[in-house]
Length: 227
Image 1 (tube, rainbow, N blue to C red):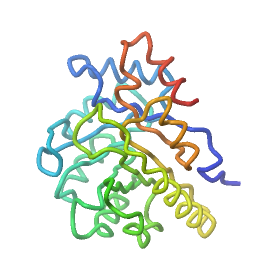
Image 2 (image 1 turned 30 degrees about the vertical axis):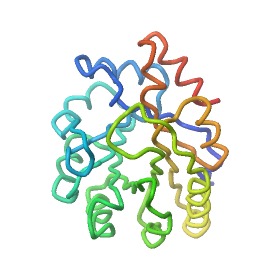
Image 3 (image 1 turned 90 degrees about the horizontal axis):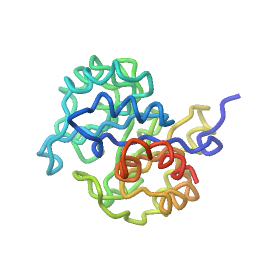
C-alpha cells in the first residue's frame, strides 16, 4: 500500500545556494554522505528573482557527484523553453512557479512529458487555491516561506498555508493514490522545521541551517532539522 506523504518521516533537501561554490561538487558529495535525501538546486535568472545562480551546465557537472534526487527549483521566467535542458542535465524533479508564466498547466505538461517529476511553487502572497486545478498533475508542492531570490532570510510563518496545502494534497492522494511531497523552503532551521512539520510538511529545504559551521557539522545539522 502506498504511504501518504503525511505519514512519511521528514526528509531534508539541503539547498546548495549556501554551499561553497568553489568546491560545489565536493559539497554535494558531503551533504549526500551526511544524510540528505534530496539535493535542492536553486536556479535563479536575475529576472524573475533578483539574483543569478546556476544554469543547466552546472547541474550536469554536479550530477556525477551524487545519486540522490536532484530537486531543481526553477526561479526563472519564462520556464518552458529551458525545461528540456534541465532534464538532460540530470534533474529528477523540476519545480516551476505559479507566478512565472500564464500557462501553468502547459508548463507542468511539458515537465512530465520528459518523464521527470513536476513540482509547483507558490510565493508567500500567492493563494493556495491557485493550484487547485493542477493537483492531478503535480508530484510536489513547494510553499515559499521567504520571498525567493536570496538565502539566509527570516521565516514567514505561513503555517495556515502549509496546513491548507496538506489538506489539498491529502484529498488528491485519497482520490488518486498518488504520493505528493509537501515541501517548505525559506528560513528553515531546527525551530521553524518543527512548526512546518506540525503543519503538514514532509520535505524541508534548508541552506544556511545545513551549511553553517563547516562540513564536519553537516550531518549534525541535518539531524537537528529532523527534530
